Length: 223
Image (cartoon, rainbow, N blue to C red; front, side, top):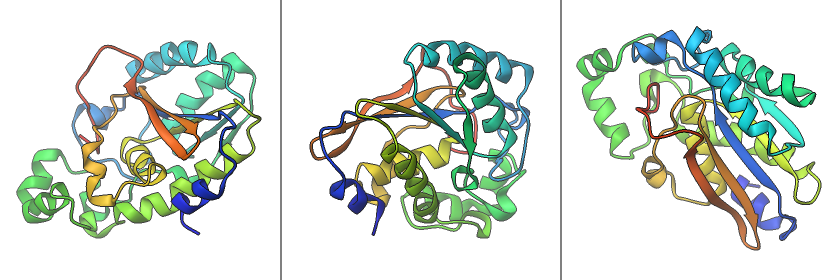
């Protein structure tokens, strides 16, 4: 069953909430290098961003935390664990999009070497960027992870999902039931900002997007 179908088949009206939180800044974000599944650590700024955001998110009294196993997401999640005392579950299904030969290249290098492929992706066409994953394949692996953990929540419970910009965008698109060529209409997340999905009578609704700070440039794989 598709992720959208699972939502439709779920029990409406339980008031659950899912917060999808992007990791803090890395050096490759600053350099505008496509990270994908490359395991790049947080910068000192990224750690500070995570600590600040964790204080805000802790005030929402989350019930559970699940995170990508890549260190930039895992270490971001650790700041919230420190404040809440919750255990975090790491799941490779929440990793960023694998982008093959694009990984490690700067934005300008990607356009220069793979311009037609990049343009097709931006038009919403299904593209294996750098020979990697389709966006729909990312949603296929990430959305079920989110749904599995959301289903374990109590009524009116809150799940924090710590992941990556591209993965969060495709997951939101899937859970909202949007066609994949419309996912680009969801803007990227700034480092350590988050989006909130709330459970309604007919499934998930986008309640907040790129929240947590004043508007900042989006640096990273999904800019």
